[in-house]
Length: 242
Image 1 (cartoon, rainbow, N blue to C red):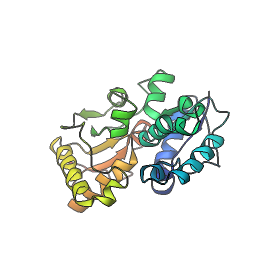
Image 2: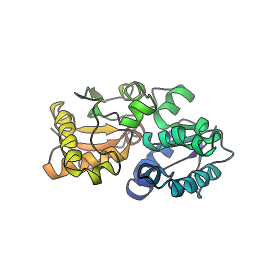
Image 3: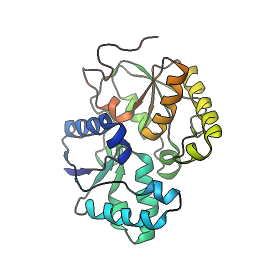
């Protein structure tokens, strides 16, 4: 099977390890991964802030970049939701049907939950708003995490509550965004997990900043990096302990 990786601009610019982990994981499962070099931003920031003409240009550009691929896989619920929900507004009906968030691609298309991962740490999972409400990922991430050898999954209190990032919401409403993020971090800390996991690095960027400022012993990590892990741990030689 051949798929196109839609890495997203956030991952490309700030979290390239997530893109690398996604490719490593898919290739381990027998998938051939292409990276269309023409891909840029999907247009979500422009659309959300009212710059519709700029968003439209990016929508058509993205559709052209991924033309011809049966499957387009992205490690981002928010960007997958943008494509699926908003692209038909501009007549781009083909790409939404072919675009899959990583965990739903694994479970629904490849029909796997045990991806051969090994990650001996305690983990709690934060479902992003786009993954939870727009894509309806449901228990797919949990099923994948529970199948990881060595991993102990702890339920996150108030998991369905927003972390407060919301793209430009965090900029325009910084005080509210910070308060919401602090509530989410507090909930994660009550689980005494070592790792706070999510399927969106935008949420993890927001929460990770708060965690670092509070100097808490909690590591934000994208689910792709957990699922791609085998004998080598993503922490390197210095693993956090509790």
